[in-house]
Image (cartoon, rainbow, N blue to C red):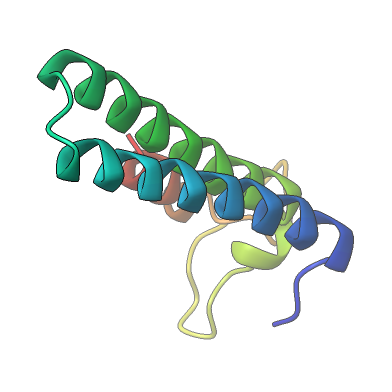
Length: 94
């Protein structure tokens, strides 16, 4: 399966930004920075990763969730969309 290039570039940009934030958190730890400041930044990294995951799922929902060959049940209103797999993906980011 190939995902939309524009959408994946936007997600990749978010992930690179999160990667930079995480590197900053590691530096903060190495410098012995205040625990509250480190946790605040670590929380920001976590939110950035969650947003990247949600953006990827939302942008490529039909491709990510096409029913499997094993006959996954799809929502009658959305042919080709497996609602249970969608819920599982979203909850994996929660």
